[in-house]
Every structure is written in C-alpha cells, then in structure tokens.
Image (cartoon, rainbow, N blue to C red; front, side, top):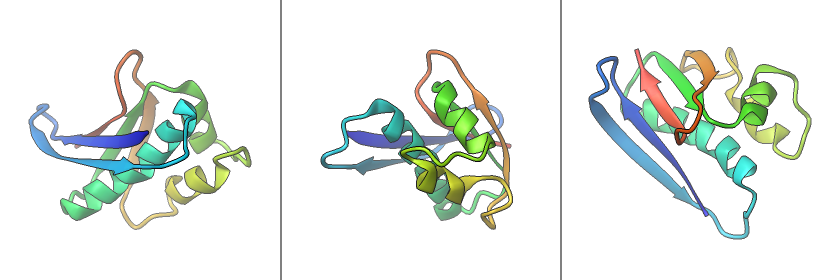
Length: 104
C-alpha cells in the first residue's frame, strides 16, 4: 500500500506531492494515519510554515485530536499540534476525498 500527501495553497494551486510506499501494511486506516506525518514532512520539505490536514477517516482525526494509544498511537502522537516545530493549524474531516494537505 501507499500513503500520499498533496500540498495546495489557499487558492487550491498545486505546490507538491509525496508518496510513501509500505510493505506488509494492509489496513486502510493505518495508511491514512501514516499519510498525516507524510504530509507534515512534505510541508517541511517545501518550507511551508502553516499547515492544515484534511482526512476522510473519522477515527484518524479523533485519534490525532485525542489521546490515542491505539494501534497507530505512536504515529499520531508525533503529529499532534504543539509537538512539531511546523505549526499544524487544524485537522478536519473531509468526506469522500483522499487525504490532502492544505496550506494557508
């Protein structure tokens, strides 16, 4: 499976993309969780200072916002707001769309 992140500016213009290919991971929810830090890494590589992440998986969003110790707790705890020098402005649900990183 693969996790991908797409960076767009406030007008929706394409800024960049990143893909992380994994072996042995077959859970779509886990891949969605993996895509979130991939998006932050993309923002860092593009020298983007303000980041919003959109996800179509309510469990991933809840686990990042909360205090998850679930199967991917170690992944989401590293991207919670305030834990990274890159300011994560917000994380929100975006129904029926793949994970995208929006830049303000």
